[in-house]
Length: 372
Image (tube, rainbow, N blue to C red; front, side, top):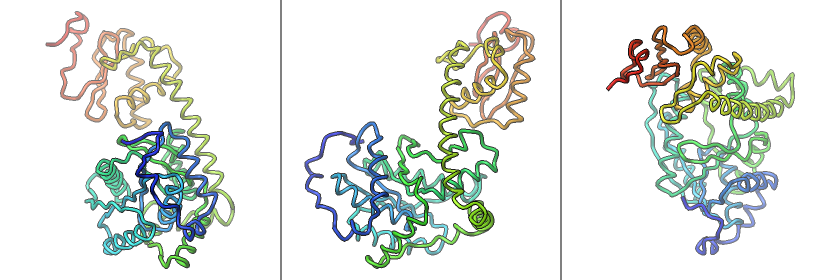
C-alpha cells in the first residue's frame, strides 16, 4: 500500500515543521519514532496514528506530526468512536480540533461494540477498535499505524498476562512491531514512562491551549486494567520503584524466548513428516519427542491452522489419547473436538478436520480406502 524507498514529489512540497511545535517535542521521543521506522523492511510514505484524545495519543500526534514533516511523510490520524460513553461525541470534536492544530487529516469510524462475544467489555472494545483501524487503513491506503502504548501500559500487560497464566509468548506482551489483519502496528514508546509523556501533555495545554481528554474507565475498579491501576499499582510504586522498567525488560526476554521456541517447534513439525497439503503429521514420529516438545509442537500445529490454544487440561488429555493409540493408529478411532474442528488419527497420521467433515472409520483406515 504505497510502501517505497523513493520520495514522492508531492510530499517533498510539504512545509517545514512549525518551530513552535518542535519546541514542545522531546528529542528522545522523536528519535524513538524514527528508530522504529528505520527497522521496517520498506519505508512507507503514508502512515497513520491512532488518536483517542488522551494524553498518550495526543503526545504521539504532536511528535509524529513534526517527525513526518521532517521525513516528508504523509501523516493521518485514525479516531474510533465507540459510543460507549455519553462524552464520545465531544471527544470526537476534541480530537478533530487537535488534528486541525497539527494540520493532520483525521479519519473517523463509528463502531458498535459487540458485548455478546463473551470476553467482556474491554476485549469487545479492543476487537472493534482494531477492526476499525483496518477499515480506515484500507480506505486511506495506509499499511502502518503508530500506537501510543508506553512503558506503564507494557508493564500492566505483563502483570495481567502473568495473572492469567500466560506462557513466554503471552508474557512477551506488546511487540514494538506487530501485524494484524495485514496492517503493521508500531509502538515506538514501549520504553518511555508515562510520566515523561504527561509532561508533554502539560506543555500542549500551556502553549496550544488544548487539554487531553480523560477516560474515567481507565481507573474504574469494575474493569480489569482499572482495578490493577487502582489496587495494585500504588503498592508496587511504593515498595518497588522502577518495577515497570523491570517488567518491560521481562517482556523483551519473553519475546526472545518465544522466538526460540517457535523455531524449535517449526523444526520439530518438519521432522514429523508434516504434509502441507492436509496439515497431517506422523503419530509415531511425534511420540519419539520429549513430552515438553510434544506439547510445544501441538500448540504450534494448531496455531498454524489459525485455531485457539487449548487449555492445559485439554492439551494434556489430547496428548494422553495420542500416546495410548497404536503407533499406526489402527486400534481405535480417536476424535478430539477442538473448536469447530476434530483432531483425528488415520493410518498413523494425526489430522485436523472440520467438525462436519466425514471422519474415516476404523475399518476404512485398516483397508486404506478413502471416503468418496
